[in-house]
Image (cartoon, rainbow, N blue to C red; front, side, top):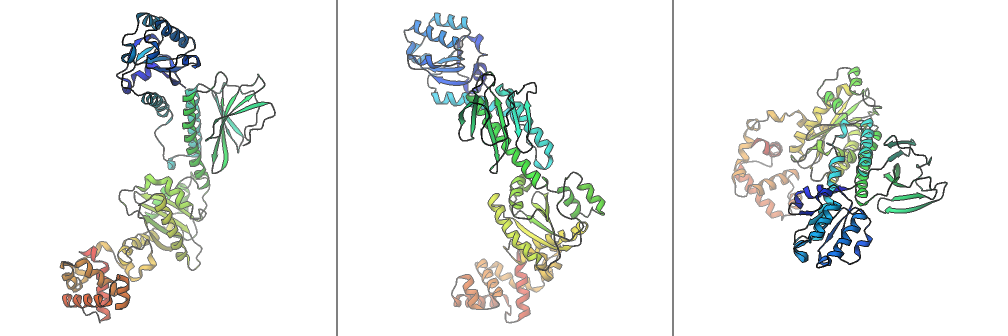
Length: 542
């Protein structure tokens, strides 16, 4: 893979560069950038370099300058850039005529330009060009099938082969199937590439091309066999694919190696997605779950329609289910955009033989869990979900997710009721249990009868009016916190003071002050209960 000199000069970074001579050769290919400021340094150029020089060696040495230009042209260098204003100031006419005759570009580099900036800019142009060619508009995993993944892999192989101008073979190590592009390339080696160890039945030499990615070059000592580059694609510690790049005409260059590394990273990511798809059905059952919680499933025939594209569903739709709902507490995090992270974190904990789930909204994930009717199943689910939330927060970070759990229903056709219960657990549980991250509908008790949208201030009668003085007090938050801690401590001053990290006398003083301000008899059990309930829903009604 190379980049033409004119492509470099057309980039906005090089807008202040100018062609001194040899404009007819701007189509020459650059495969590397090299510095030249030693008298005999040009002797080690091997071709296709964009040569950079201050011009110091050429000042007053026209014949030497001509010899270097001829040598670079003969050996296939792409162009020379010099800082004309540093030492030369005026390029001799003989040099200009020679460059025009040879169509060898001579380019003026601005005086203040740093070499490292030039090198980085040329490299960026070459690599960005390949990235723009190889990366299409991303597809979401939920819309891709295994066939789509395999077509995407072949597409990357096609583009890489065209870019580096070499035939490529990709081998599925498991199925031992191979695909070669271009198809007209004939591989007469008859070599088994599926082994993780490079061990062939002929003499060869082995060279490490990239140690980090374990890329090696195999050169058969038999002249009838062309050398190749071997690239293993390892997923979760296991060799799954092997890429063979056939160096039939020439060896890969620097830019080609960078392209190969980019393509390898993309292929590994696609294989990871394919692995997840094949091991966890590869989809989230979004359509099925949305239809179920909306009450659109009226028969198991309708269920089969929604499952038609899934090769194997691991749950039994005619058995009992419990519905749970995960809700993101951060409005800035769109769960749909975090599909892959959620997929890996949730499914690494939940038994995928008993759970299916789908993202039904930007901030909601619904899980259908097949249950067996044994006692304690909701308690076990709550325990699992605490680990799920830990993993989600670790994977996504800052999502502040909460989970509501419904009760068991007889089959997948009846999950709407359990879903509504899971939502109620989330909505009411927020007021009843504060910061508790997992709340089951059965935890709500009689509070499960509440409909938050119907709650109004008048429903609380005089209780809200009684605590109004606390809301208007300068130390409102302090007094409300003390009253709530006292009520939740079963009116025990010592327990309340420990919870608040205050002296017992301080709590006694505040409670006495609250009773005086609010006309509340906290010795009356019913009055305490009504006050505690009012405090639970205070944020909602005020």
